[in-house]
Image (cartoon, rainbow, N blue to C red; front, top):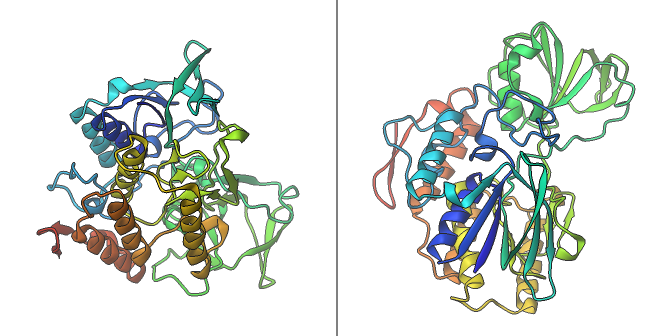
Length: 417
């Protein structure tokens, strides 16, 4: 079976490895010159030398917000000698070690940008690719396509009343690299996710002042510098200030949006039969297989989970059906399952923007479903236990949760110290 993998980040690498193990012919296309996806720190912002958007959203000083013990692939643990919360460079080293260990690099065409993916009449796939250094176009035919472009490449920039009036700089955290670029500036930062928290703490050390706008109903358990001012959502922007929903206002020179990312697949033709609406990709069986065309799959859409483990399970789940080791449920059965699953997500109070969010109990159920249906060995319980404990630590002590370390004792038990 001929498989196309789009992207050579965390999801793409395990897709290549598992496809090889399932005796498939695999070819991967990576826009950049190296593996790692969002874990590659790039100094350039905006467009690269080929006129394409810089893919990575990495910034200087980032440490992981979950421990490495739950960031490993199932069959390739991280080195045990390092701390649990590691710098992004260690993650990139790990991914390179994984690629070298399993001889993945020769399956990857670097500096190749996928332009178009189209289904053909015989259910195969035409993939049109731009060879960036040569500025030439190549056409390939595959039996299946794995979309592994990640969740952190296309900025989500909400429209705020007065956007066009504000005379200062407006940037997204996708283009944030170093706090030094904000030295002595008055900065307003929007967003209270992991990136927002990191960026507020970093920029407060160089900026004149930081206004932090969030819509949180409860105060975060975090110690902030004296030059950080907490504010609610912005109601309106003026030429040099923001008016907040509580009627207060503040002046600043730079608006930095740490407002997350959105799914974007501009290379998919309309007849691929998937819809992306407000970040919700549908209709997908188990958040990955395109129900209308089940040889097109999306690896890595779910958020708030043990990513490397989860992506690896998704890949093997899809390959079991694509290689006909298992019979795929009928379209009607998959649609019923999909509708039931999404009804459960809506009952959790999730919007379409967060439709693929997992978390504590839902992640455990999701792993169980994938392993049961595809007849895979279940995820080790200790992985889920460490993940859950790390999330509890994060919310209870944002200042110091990264000082904790974890050690796996066996498949069920771990030690925290």
